[in-house]
Image (cartoon, rainbow, N blue to C red; front, side, top):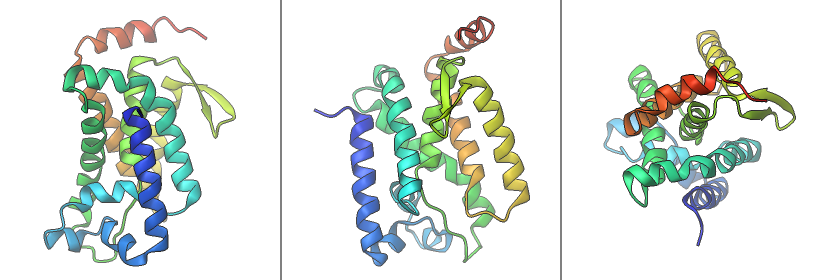
Length: 202
């Protein structure tokens, strides 16, 4: 029996592979505001299960596997057996709402990838274990809380600069959702966070 994190990864990999082989399927699943305006609201979810290329897919799924399995139990405890799946799918949706509002009349806007959901998982983990060592690019060790600060700052900077195919704001809003949802479900995580923050362990 797979844990739900692994199940999400398997589904995402299969859907991404199928979409790479079938352009019509790829175009049907990608986030495209004019299609959403015509009633295809499912694209708020489906875009999170396709990726631009193998590296995009690998990075998101590697991150999800490492951090999702570490926090999955928390959401199952408060939301039931499929709590983590609910949290993850809601994160994908919420992360794209600001982009949709900004680009709902932009016929050339497209977006895809699980980054909104993955960012939510990552930031929920950071809230719980702020001094855990993360490995940037799987090589450079960095405390989770410092990574979070740098991640937010870079996302804001990159979004304002523009000129990239990466939806940096979806990353940021996904992370914000992960933090807020975790606090709503378990308010005591706030004093835990600050206690842990003031007691670094390396």
